[in-house]
Image (cartoon, rainbow, N blue to C red; front, side, top):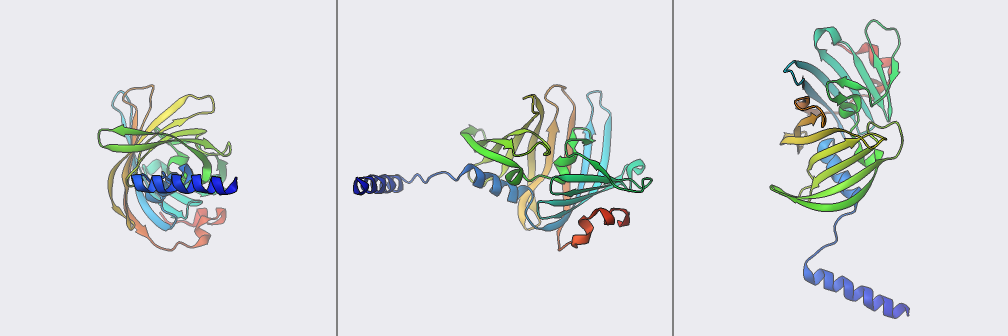
Length: 248
C-alpha cells in the first residue's frame, strides 16, 4: 500500500514538472515577500509627506521623519504643521505611545487612532502584515496590467490596525497593488493603493500610498515617501525614555 502511494505521488510530481506548472508559493510566503518590498526588515529612516483632501477641496499637508528598526519598532517625528511640530510617536511591537512637548510623560495610544485624514497611526508606524495577520490565498485575479494573488488576512490579535485585510499582490514580482481594510463589524473602512514604484533603500518600493474613504467621494489621503536612508539605528531611540530627547 505504501509503495503504491509513493508511485502515485512520484507520478504526480513528474507530471507537474513536465507540464511546467510549479506549485504557487504559500499565502504566508507571498505576504512576507510583499512585506520585504513595502518595509524591509532593516534599520532605516525615511521622510513621509501626508496630504489629506476633503470633499469640499480643503487640503492639509503634514510632514514626518520616520525611523524604523526591523518591523517591530518605529518612531514618527512630526515636523509640520508648526502646531504639531515636536509630537513624537513610538511603536514597540504592537504597543504605541505619543509624546507631546507640553506633557511630561508619553501617553499610551492605539494603532487604530487617526494620525491625519484617512491615515491611521499604524499605517505609517507598523506595516507588518506577515507578523500581524494569518494569510489565506483566496484566488488569482487578472487585471489590465498583470496577474495578482488575492489574499485574505485575518488579525492575530485585537490591537493591530485593522481586523481584516483583503490584499492584492502581483504574481511575477510580489509587489503590493492594493488593499481593502475592514473593521471587526465587517465594514469596509478604507481602500489603499500602492503606487509610484522606485529605487529606495536597496530595492524597488512603492513611494506613494493612496488611501480613499469608500463611502465619501473625494476624501483622500496620500502618503509620499522619499529620501530613504539605510543605516544602523541605536536601540535607545526606540524607548519611552528617549522620546523627549529627539531634536527638531
